[in-house]
Length: 382
Image (cartoon, rainbow, N blue to C red; front, side, top):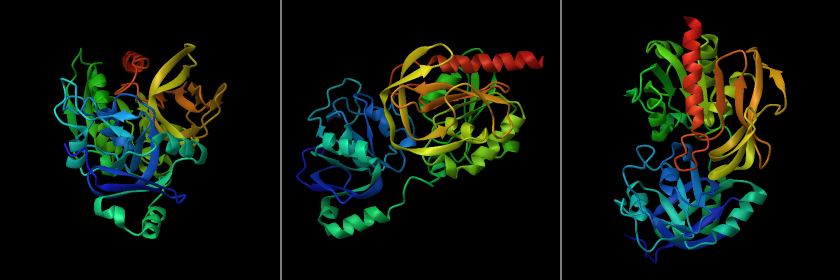
């Protein structure tokens, strides 16, 4: 472990503020959107969630790293965060499942981080001013002229308008066979899918075909899918026109559809609604959401900075001509749209992560709801 370093590091925000700490992980320079995640556990799943690509993640929990890292709990093939901010890295790794330290894993994947700064103060700034661009400069890069560091931060691309799907998606199809009674082939558009999602879908009887984000409708039809699934992922949904066009063809084919997180935003766009950027987003494993169909309040896992702009009360007509639509789930902290349900098509979506890696299992039933929707659709065809 290289945890107890005296190497300097500085976090520079686009508002000009500077926070001096110690290097953590790889040395060098990294730029991205600084966001905070409120989970007290599950940092490994957070780090390996492709939805965090392009973002410098600040952990609000002060003590990070005590359970180390292991190969079993990773959600994808690498750590995706652009940078990492923690207050107090653990002095030791003390979990029997650990195979590596967090610090060494960050260094291995080239993730530049910073420790020893007041993460609570920075979180309060982000909650007031909103997520903003930032940069972590560590090791020799910490000595770069402060004006030059600020210039680099302010010239970095904003998250609005960015399409990051190609950076995180597979480049060739990958198939995971069903682990329960088989229903059929499921086409999963990989916009940043997590392994726990694939496992949950396979456990519901689907042969899960994880497809590159660039596929065409003909390539989707070629696997003879019984349904289509859009995964979570990074970036601005307004910059994903290809995925919206593809989804409209899926809806035109009357194929059952389920989308989560980024997939929820893209279903919203396909149905004709707009999307917008949230001030500081929802990131963590303790977000309360109301399921309007059951009246149940769920504690859910979130990672999104954008949301669907749709009426939260009543049934409305799809602006794109896909029949009646209702908002099925609402965030109780700020009334943000957290789910959509098409009433004249076999399609629904949620804004959060029902696979709950890491996070509570309150929303896992949604995979069963999707399975039931697909089976009902098949029975109706017969």
